[in-house]
Every structure is written in C-alpha cells, then in structure tokens.
Length: 377
Image 1: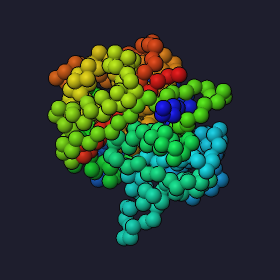
Image 2: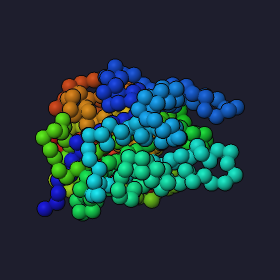
Image 3: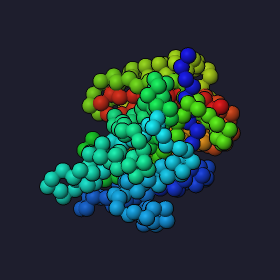
Image 4: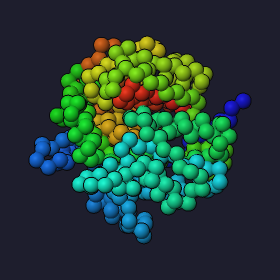
C-alpha cells in the first residue's frame, strides 16, 4: 500500500499580498493585481500583474540581513521562510524548485553567460541559504511546472527517496517573457477574460509560492490536504498550440482521477488553467466535457494574478486549498458570456460551498498537460 502524502503548509508572494491571508482577502473583495505596466522601453504598456519592487525590498530588508540576491531570489526567500521556520530540514528532506525562466533578467546586456542564470545554480543558492542537505531538484516544464513539482514531491516520497519536501515555484516578469508572448500575438489588450466570448489574450504575471509536503502528520498541523492522484501527459501537438481534441489534458485528468479512485461526480471544484487565449480555453472546455466534468464549478485565477508561468500551478493550488478551508468558491473574474463551443460551469460570484475534492489542472507550450487531485482531510 502506498504512503499517504499530504500538503500541510503553504505561503505565497504576489502583487495582492506577501502572505496567504492578505491574498485571500483581496480575492474575496474581487481585487486584481493586473494593471498597465511599461516594461519594454519604446514599446506600449501591457496589462500585467507585477509586484511593487519598493514594497518587495522593504519586506525583504525586514526579514533578511544579507541583501545580495536578485529580485526573483528575494521573492523565493520570502515565500519559503515561514515554512522553514515551522518544519525541520533533515537528511531526508527534498528541496524542489519550479520555474520556467529563473533569473532570465541577468542575461540582459551581458556578453557572457552569468552563473546565476543557470536554473541549477538558482536552486542551489536558495537551498544553501536555508541549509538543505540534499541536492536540489529543478522542475522546468513550461507552464505545468508548478503542478508537476507537487507530483514529483509526492512520487519521490512514496518511492522512499525522501520523507518530506519543500516545494517552491516562481517566475518574474521580464522583457524576454513579454517579447516571447507578444511574438505569438497572445497578450491581451485589457485585463484578461478566461472562457469569455470577448477574451483576446493573456496577461503575464509574477509570483512565488511554497508548500510543505510530508508523509507524516502531527497534531500541530492547522490543516492537511491529501494528494490523491497526479498525472502529466504530453500530446506533442504543437510547439505552442494546444490539442484541438484536448487529448493530453483529458488523459492527465483521467489518470489522476483513476489513481485517486475518484469519479467525476465526486469532484467539488476545478481550478483550471484558463489563460484567456482562444485555443487554450477551447481545448480545456473540450477536455472537461470529454471526462464529464462540465457541471463542476470551475474558475481561472488569471484575471487576478495574470499568468505566472512556473508559479501559476502552485499558487493556484494554494488558493484552491484556501477556498476549501473557507468553504467559499472564488469567481472567474471578468467572465460574462460563454466563449467556448462546449459549456462549463464557470463560477460568477463568491459563493458558499462544501469543498472536499479539488481537481487542479495546467497546460503549457509543447503539448504538456498536468493534473492533480487533492482531498481536504
């Protein structure tokens, strides 16, 4: 019999707040971190969700003496610090970092490749600071990275490689990221509208998030969520375009639910990817209908946080668990009229709900898809 694996603690750093509580209350009030930002010189402003650098530096100075860190590293350290202070790091503790671009900003105006730009070096720097004893694991698989990092921790603990794990995920907004998405003509002209008929593209966001995962519960835990099942499938459809049949996402969800031994009727809430691009939203609607989840309450948090790349899956999982703890479903902001060929039960306003089983999904470039099923204990 496989070990039961639990998430028992979490934290996040976002434009809506530097802890989970402030983020949750901002979401309840319908606040969004997405505003106009001038990111690239001599180009128009973009709608994006960006952390105030002055507030970030002030918070960091209040918590750390050593200031020799990049902006992204400061975000990572702030997100992880409260968890490390509460949970012991041992010889059997894994450290897993999820990111798509890491310290990509270090490459600007550089003739040689800075050491800090390597994802392995970024992970090692964070691990060394907190005194982790095992070699860091980096998960970098486009925009499913955050969800996959949870799955990697679960599976490695079940395999006996580790006893527990700290998982962190993060990305920051940069000229490189904005230019890349803009080249696909994927960036929206206003705050994004996932699944809505009038959606016209994504907003980029930035955040860091952290969770503590363990196979051993103790009486001091304020909450616990069992990771019942996970799966990641690559349908290899296209370098950037999702499958028209939703095959990869459908298979990921099916596998995760099979491992969890949960039927579609049992799922209480879906935290979807919902980027507000025409092809992604349509693909998700097809996949959810194929597995008969079209009536389950569903939201996307992208209109609150933007698309936070490697952080999005972990951040959105945290907010999903917070929803379950508070028995409140958060609406999919800016949704008014269905813009997909198949119907979905999009949440339109704050509403009370008993949430026990959560399905979290993610999709990304290259045809990658991932899903996890969580149970509130």
